[in-house]
Image 1: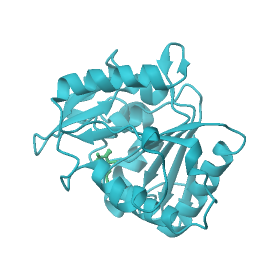
Image 2: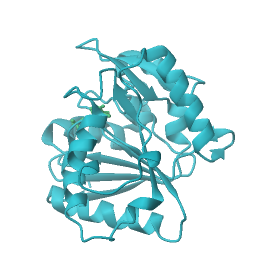
Image 3: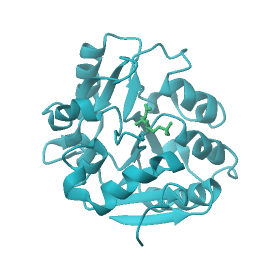
Image 4: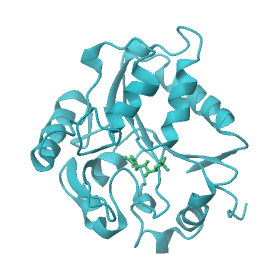
Length: 239
Ligand code: 6PG
């Protein structure tokens, strides 16, 4: 686990982008699972300001770690957010974008996407393996759309699961723990004071945290787990 703490989102975005460029360099094609919610917005906005060619978008196949079960036109949609903050400004071949189809029935869509991952990704020990997997973390310790009240979904033998938001009841489709931990490089991008308590618990009291928080169960077999934090999210860490 590598932890980097940044004064500003801009510095975090810059450093994360350098890491992504390192991974992309020398590869013909790269698969990335994008996280949703609000944190990635500033990263995507940053990416759209980069000089032409700084990231070779044509090399990248875009997937998602989770999606809300709403139409792609709904303001809750992670796909819509990504389109508005990224895809509307960069040229990515349509064939390289693999949305979770939030408009579909959640159960069958989880199955469809799980099969798609088997078709599109290299496998590690028979499990589809992303080159880059971005994760956010909720202030309740959820990640992707695996929430504490449905911790058992993390251990599903399926690639994707149907989940439920604990407060709104909104249905979600999410990668399961097996796919998250099969990724070659996993990046938590976590900012904001409201995340500080869980960041401390998950990083400094991991054994206890694993019993409660899905985010604590992110332990990629590759060993390549990176925490990109801003100072507010990291403020309770001891060192
Ligand atoms: C989603 C995300 C979710 C998100 C966390 C953090 O669909 O909402 O994938 O896991 O990363 O909830 O969200 P914020 O970045 O908005 O704090």
